Length: 87
Image (tube, rainbow, N blue to C red; front, side, top):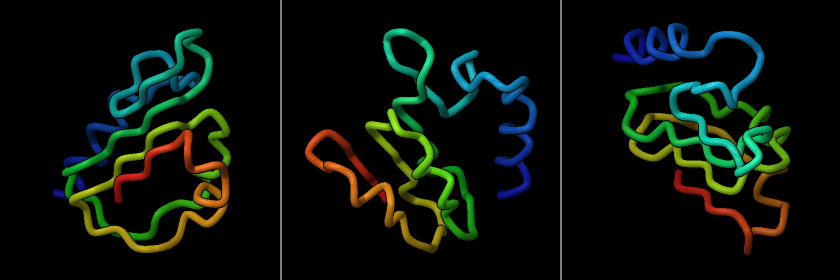
């Protein structure tokens, strides 16, 4: 299950621009910044990457119904009134 999910990512994430129709990624109205990452129910397991904290325009992060562990300290320290975390 994890391998098939990773294959979907590998096949859809081409190039360096996440706003070019990458699966699970939605960008802001300008199409230049990642605003939503929705990877719910993908069967992923492992540690949540701290790299999510580098997405400064991220407003919604959905990782629910996977088997992920770890902390999103830098993400959660930001003003949460404008962000939604579904873990």
